Length: 471
Image 1: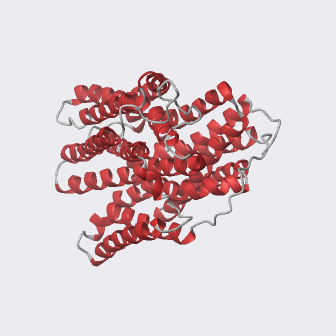
Image 2 (image 1 turned 30 degrees about the vertical axis):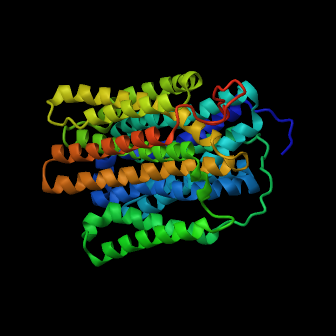
Image 3 (image 1 turned 90 degrees about the horizontal axis):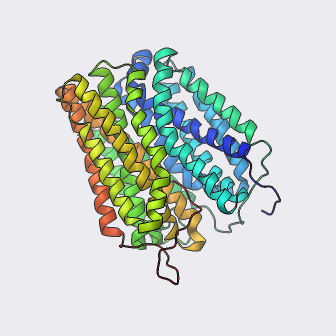
């Protein structure tokens, strides 16, 4: 869409506020599990479902929402996402049990699916050159850094004001975001003639929801109960049918031909697995509060190292990428992340020593993710065909959300199951080891899939980066 409009700092601020609303209700929830459980009187299993639903629904709908935003208007979809954020937050503010909590979390997932791709597209549309790189860096810092900021802020708010106030602040940020982008012109992409793959989309939803229910509720249902077995069958059959049908469609919901490119596949799989490591946040925060007597604010303080490290290392990862290519920083980042997560599992350590170790673990976690972030995204997008960059980016972001959803669900299920049969220390260690396994698998996917230098090359043979991308 041709326009003389140039992006402003006001627009950047509004978009960053919009991105932060997602982290306020996504990240803050993992920091206030005991408070929410005590207040609403619901089971840990049901609360784990609620926590994972936002990332699950964001992951399921983000590709579709990104495509619709291109056709119907990116500013429009950003505003739709912000309105949904307000509605979802209101559901949580007035929740008295599991019903409004679940509904609110689903609506918040839909909100994130609308906001994330639409705001990236707006940044790309109204900024050029160095200004565009700067704008997208702020988006990325708002996203990666927002997780740390909101983890800390959520703990402080929950301790001194009550957990519901987190979502009051989320509403304030959403309203401010709408006001700040009010003067931004509408933006649309080129009209796409291909029809949306509704049948593939519905089958994908059914399969992902069934899998999520198996992971989060299998223990409560009974792993060999008829309901669990039915859900397992739906998951397996749904996945097989989805792959078979989608491979033969001209306009499929997920274009499997993209995965013929090994660097793209390696970046997307490792992105899924490293986002799954987010389960560490649920386990560590719950354990230090329930097992060590920390307040939500104190547990939030433990993640300050993560916040500082991830914010400071995003640009460093970009510089390493420019000098060495993507494979080295992705490997280094993944190894550092795995080590950071692993030390948090040393629950046999005494009080103060364990507190120091967890703080260091969080800092290493953030350090590793910060180094990994930009090289991974650049690899995914620069290895996609030029006519499918948007779709490839959507699938890559979907991997982020689904990885986070299933990582949280699996870790929490393991923690809850072992906590009932054994000690909290054993449960926390087992849950965290699970996340170390995710990091190891991510490392393997990078080593196997990525060549020494990846992406397109210039005439001089040096790797060429696509600078106009973010996390």
